[in-house]
Length: 434
Image 1 (cartoon, rainbow, N blue to C red):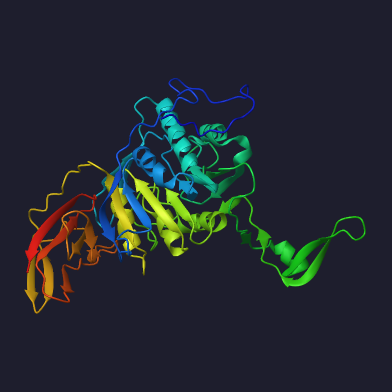
Image 2 (cartoon, rainbow, N blue to C red; image 1 turned 120 degrees about the vertical axis):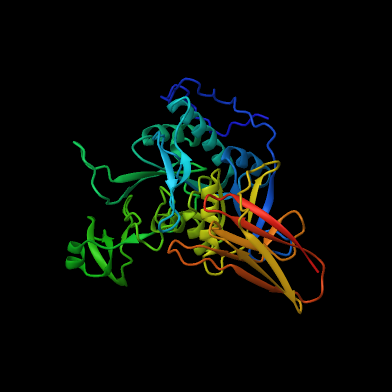
């Protein structure tokens, strides 16, 4: 099946980005993709046994074609913070004194052309998944912002452009004979070239000079004399309509919000994006979800969400972060069918279960390498449904190593214990109970 989601320009002579190996327009083919299967469920099950939120452990180029049949034209907001073609390697540090764990590589075998080919393929899939009023925010920096702007114009159309947002921050200065690089860019595009997208105006504080002159009353324009002159109402002002330069601090090393994942973005930044460009109940997606900031903020703001990342460390970090939220909504963890992952070696970890009067208790022994563990108290041999869980925190608090469950009636069957290390590698133990 061929799919070309790029809108018609009406002028094929316009300048466009060209590189060696760039796919010709209209030739992208979507082959048969492996379906996504639920491997674990966290939170209370719905009547149909599923969950409205999803955390997908896969390359997004495999996940998105698998989602098209169900979700084409149904996602209301996409935010992505993709690699920036820096050529670097990034590591995570999940706790005090913890060793660094490789998180992801930003290296491209065939250089920038390989990077741009992949980004074009992904942008076309993002556009296909967006709802008619959906929009996308693409986060980047000086390495690739100029290239991505050209690609976005080509895939979405120049008329779909809404904003180029500058995220300005402060950090320790670098030693350089140039101005300090202390901003990133977010490009905002719509599925449609009109104003049908979700929009909630945001406001920022008035300038001190404005407050001194006009106070806190709302200003309006008065044209009664034939010329524009400022006037006021008795209504309190909400502030100045927010501009496209956002001064938001980066996450401090000791901040409660920090989870140890590289390139983690502040929740304040994603809160601004999600509040402005979506509505409660909308479906928000991040296909480079990393530490899970987008998912955590969407959860707090009452949005449905989909997160996807190919990295085990990212999926593990996001899962722990979500489960730490009070009252977190249920979510499924999915992978492409047939995916096999190396199991973590937990040979030194003992798992013991005892039962008394309908109550079963599971206890771990020698759990120094366990970062997260959970118990499915009625394991069906297929999907792991976590009924209890515990994890280490960045503050280095001791891991809770015991969990109990009471059954309403006598039963025989299996319980499963899932063990996960700090790199996201898993192992599962199955115990017969009766």
